[in-house]
Length: 262
Image (tube, rainbow, N blue to C red; front, top):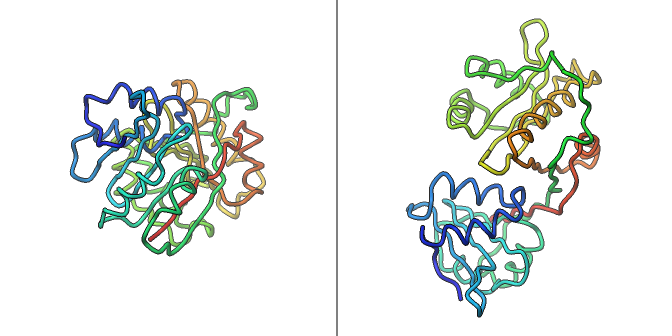
């Protein structure tokens, strides 16, 4: 049976999604931020015959995310998606999205499958102090945005001071950086932070300062501090070469994240 969840279902919902905090980073964060009673956000639950919650379908604005630890009513979730007009994305763990896909009625314009990795301990990280790596404050955001907009791999990205400031002030993002001659030359950031997990994004080094280990140092300092707070870290990557850097720090592949656009 599938029905829309309310605040009365919060405890059982949390028990399910907190079993895999990194995998459910977006669902956990959206529920913490907006709850169950928003026009732009709805959450449905799939219950088995014993009345136990076994699956979640979250709609946040134009994006649907399905999740389950095992068997769930994929056709039922697809029916909810099909009956909705204002959506353009279905995303989630690849094996779960793949179960829903055969029942979707709209044509899929594009599919993207990214490696999904997580880190939950510091055992693979060096224990050096890394004094050259600093945490950015609000006054540092213009320098950060300037760096991000000079990274060739990020061309086309929508990096603005206003968006970075909003995320940092909301407590859902942080950045660590290395600076030389008054200019940011390397950085690593989080986004979508919640009480259980955080997503690592925008790991970069200016082309003129590569091969110095700066990105690894930024990642290491960032991951150490987030893990100390009891959170898991996760990230997406397309390039297996970049994946080797993350794995040296302690990230392990946990599957693929699929992004379907309609």
